[in-house]
Length: 349
Image 1 (cartoon, rainbow, N blue to C red):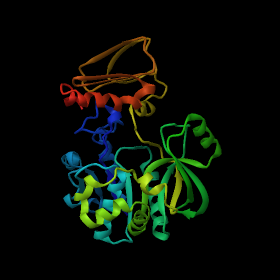
Image 2 (image 1 turned 30 degrees about the horizontal axis):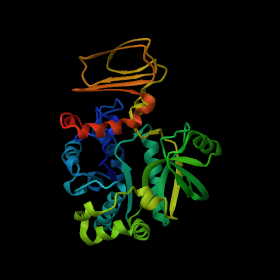
Image 3 (image 1 turned 90 degrees about the horizontal axis):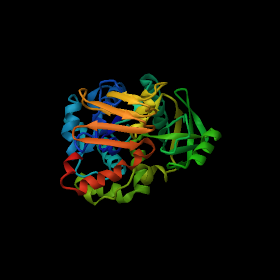
Image 4 (image 1 turned 45 degrees about the vertical axis):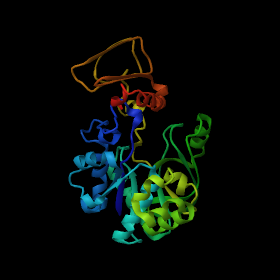
C-alpha cells in the first residue's frame, strides 16, 4: 500500500493553540510528545515499508512545516497544493500521481493527519485487511469506527449486505452515508447495530478510484489530468465524501474498533484525559467550585484561577485567551472570521 496523509487542514476549532502556520496536525495534543502528523506517519510507516513509499499532501503555506516535522520524507513524496480546495481535489491529484509512478493496480490509502488512535497494532491489522479487500475486488474500502456513544458530530456509514471476510474482518457494502445526524437519529443508528462512524480513511486501487472519479466527479479529475495541479484554483471545492463516496456503488466498509477520536475540537481533549477527574487541567489551575471544565495554558509559568464555573473550556496561548461553553466549541470558526476582518487582530489567526 502507498499511504497518503491528508495534511492540509486548518484545525480552527483548536484556536488559539492552532494557528494559520501551526495547525492542529502540527500540535501534540495527546500527551505523547509527538505531533498528530508525526504520530500518523509513524503508524503508517510499517505499511508503507519505509519513507520512500509514504506520501503527504498539504497546502502551500504548510509545506515547510511538514518538512520540518517529517525530515525523512522524500521531497518527491510531498505534494503541495497551490490552493486548498477540500479533500476531493487532493485525493484526485494524489491518486493520479501514485498511478503515474507505480501503476493503476497499486493500492493507495488516504488518511487524515490528525486523529488519535489507541491501538496501533489493531489499526495496522485492519489496514492489511482493507488492502486485501481492495486488491481482490473493485472496491473502495473505508474503515467504519464502531460507535461508543450517539455522537451528533460525526458522519455515519450504514452497512448493507456482507461481501466476505478479509484478514479476519467482515466487510459490507455501504448502503448510505449520513452526515452529523441529530441526537434521536444518532441513538437509532446505535440501536440498530448497522452503523459505523465515518473515519475519513479510504483504501482502493488507483485505477478503480480514477474510474469512479471520471464517472462521478469529471469536473475535478479531467482538468487535473489535462492541466495538472496548476488548475487547482479553478476546481470546485468539494469533499471526497460528497464528490465520490456518497455516489459510488463500489464503497465497502470494514467495521473496526481500535480506539479512535477525530480530535475535532477541545472537547476531544476532555474525552482523552478526563477519566474520573473533576476537570482536565493542562495548566497551573486553581479552581473553586469549578467542574467538568478544561483549562489549558501554553505557558507553564502562568496560573489560571476559576470560581463557580461548569462546562467551560479555557485556553491561554500567547496574547489570546479563549473562554467558551464547551457545548459551543463548534462556533469558534465564527469568531475567527471576526478576527480576520479586524486588521489589529488578524495576526492572532
